[in-house]
Image (tube, rainbow over all chains, first blue to last red; front, side, top):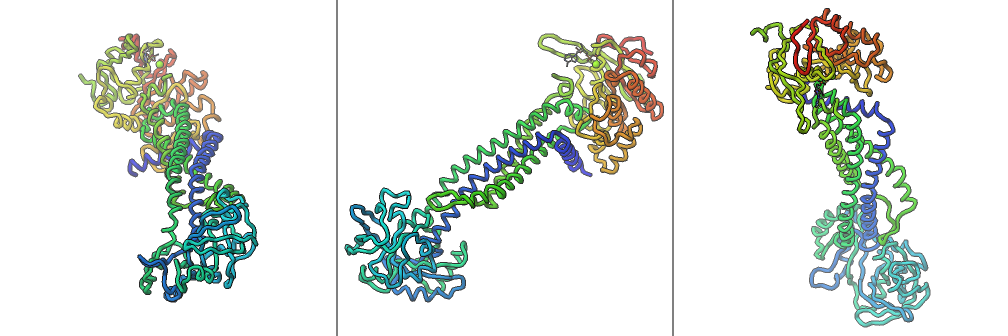
Length: 403
Length: 232
Ligand SMILES: Nc1ncnc2c1ncn2[C@@H]1O[C@H](COP(=O)(O)OP(=O)(O)O)[C@@H](O)[C@H]1O
Ligand SMILES: [Mg+2]
């Protein structure tokens, strides 16, 4: 046997004995603290990952679907959107398309008014790319032949506890008449047909009319500001982009991520916060391990002196403490994961956190688990090394007989 | 001089150890020159504070002399690095301390075979050699017991078995019976006597019990850190 394997074996043997036959209470308490440190590390990450996930889902489900086709450069509209849709509708994985007009407008009710974005859709098509038709909380979604009827999100309607209540119409209800002034100067009155709530602050600031209605407002036909495309998978948008280009789509094709700037901004500000809580978590875990190992080296000072006297190398002793520290950390990570999956995740599924991007539950990403547990184990190993390294600095005689 | 001859296992020349405590210097050993023969059972005796432990620590490579030379088994000790010295102790020395210095987390057998494990022996060999050593000290039945389940005398015998496991060239013992009742003390000394007689184990033992002098081959008397002339 090589000397390194021998040393590792002796270190592991010592560590095993100290843990298995040492003080149960200390061991359990240490593992519990490690578990809490791990949960603390994972919790913020999981909330942020959950927020990111919720935002992504909302952006896709309520704002942009998976892929957006926009007019080519210099153009205002896509001409003959049906021909574009025909090119791509048979691509495997494409499960829906919706050509939309998008325009700005001032919407007013009595004294209240504000500027919002209005989309015009074919309701049947829209159902294939958006979940908003299923999110009506008052009234109904648009019908294909509706004219002079409008549906709006809760942030426009007001009265639903939205974050932008002060800029809303102050609590309009289905049947109210809204005065809409389009950017081209056309003014029309609409009956409020329905109000939807997506839980997403962005989508709740949208208003919808039918395609028919908008074409009469704009005085154009067979055009679109954008075509939303729904695919059956998320994350393969680039593949579809290439295929669409190959099929002769000359318009601007973008994946939803381009519009999800909001996700990126959120994540970036989270990253700093996340790094800070992470650093604190690693520090707490490290200090805990340091204290536990320090106390152990102090109480075993004489015994370790005797082991050194009878010829056990210092590196073996140091490594046995590093092994103990790593063991505590590994058990802590496992116990922490159990706490996360058995208690916290189910709890937040039952009681989601309410954020502007909607209901958020914990999302435990494998990458986060790996980096956080590796970080915890490394800080534990360092924290185990320091006191044991310090302990073997003193002479053998001082260790055995010193005071 | 024939001091480093075939049958000499330890030879010292002008060995001194001075402790410095602030401005005060304590000369614990003064120019000690002595030989220990292979197979000898020698006792180091003298009043408390005469330097017995200090001498044992120098010979057992647990401390570094201020001056002088030590040759053990033909090796000039001052030339050894720290890790060579550690290896030397593991392979060639066995120690028994005054306090029963065994690990409470391990069974008697595990305590005993730890030094064999550190030499790279397999689990099977460790257990076999450990049981042999326990048999020598008469503790076969206690193999799986933890120290807290054993008497002081038994724990000290575990420490002796541990000291013997790697078949040391020299067994060092510093007042091994000081904490034991007279019956246990007698048992330990007889064990040493037997080991020396039956296996030719070299033993260097510090003791302050005058009656121990009758059991050993030779007594090295220390007074104020120096070896006294009247040997034997
Ligand atoms: N670490 C030390 N620092 C200072 N003085 C010491 C130290 N160790 C021993 N001494 C002194 O050296 C002398 C010899 O001590 P020691 O060898 O322990 O004596 P013995 O074992 O014979 O009782 C004593 O005067 C003791 O006080
Ligand atoms: Mg002494």
